[in-house]
Length: 184
Image (cartoon, rainbow, N blue to C red):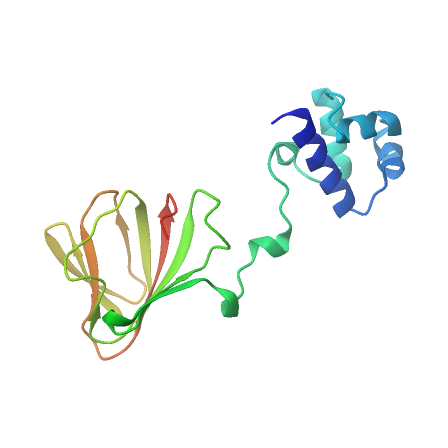
């Protein structure tokens, strides 16, 4: 992260706290001029100065070196999820529970209508998955094995392992996945 990005991050946290540069200066005992230079990327603050600023902003020091994100951008509302629906598979549906694919993991909700399957043949991909059966029961074809998973069961699917899902029951089944890296 360069000085300009660091400065922008500090400015965002400062503004999020509704502090002026002068107010932050008074709390930190760092001059307003120095804070202004830091925020504009014109000065390289010492680690000690960064600690004082982070403490005043009530954020962990490391957060100054990561991208500032508003809490509202981390929330995915139920009525605004990105969805993929497969009409050819009895309306098999995937909903992205993560706000986006920018991180190193994604969360997905899979809704499996009664008497449906995810694919004709097992598929494989580069991502590692952990799946949790939220409701119903599903049959998992994984590698050379076939396992029935029930409400509350979970499974880890390593990268590259062929698998497919099937709902042989007369009730909808719901499965939540954590997938890394994101592949939705």
